Image (cartoon, rainbow, N blue to C red):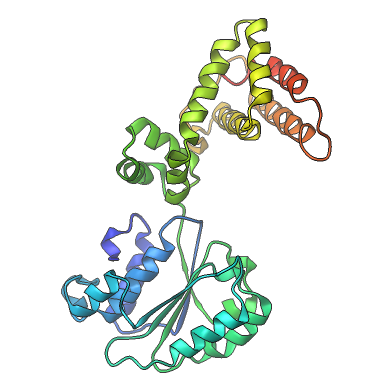
Length: 321
């Protein structure tokens, strides 16, 4: 991985580049920010840069020297990757990492990348503290986390923090379009709904969520003009195994309409035009009506889903267009 292959994150990447160029590399970092914004890729690019023989030629890993070829193939012995084997990082996994860090690099630097560092159990964190304070040799430890404040303060206090921000929809859409081979319209919709995460947006495409969302609103729009059609739509919706997902679609639409009506269309996940007959408060009220219905058909209430959907959609007919 190379810095230039990572989208956005200019501030974080520039700081990492400068630290390598000036040979002022901290012994431990925590790369934090939303899921799917390039933290792990940046960690891999940083590790490759620290081991590149020709880094100064281009201010990033060259990709052609022997260490770079090994890094890009995932075979560089200087780069150690660790991730939770079963939801959490346990003390034994940290001890395995400590043993691996005893390896002395003949050239370059040993870099340990710890994924999902926030899942580290307290016992594991306590085992890790000493290593984090004094990594063996000139080793560098990079903790990658999407939940910074779930980590122990004693861990955070020993790391230099590098912030990664949510990406803009305009930055994400071309990536989603190219990766998934979808239309620019679907890519932009996924990017807007992905809350700044490329991986989340790609999952939406791959899981068929964007297509299902479009179909839901098309069917809803065609049913709104007729009471009988609306009842039929509600009946089918109540039987759908994805009912909860459909109601979440409705909530996201209402949220976007509310912020648009409030004069802040730039905050909307979708580009929408709010109805002149509905106010921000009306959309907000509708949002909480959907939330209430969602709760009533779920544990522990289990209200009649069809009746709940008939009542809800009748109320929504004029407010979620």
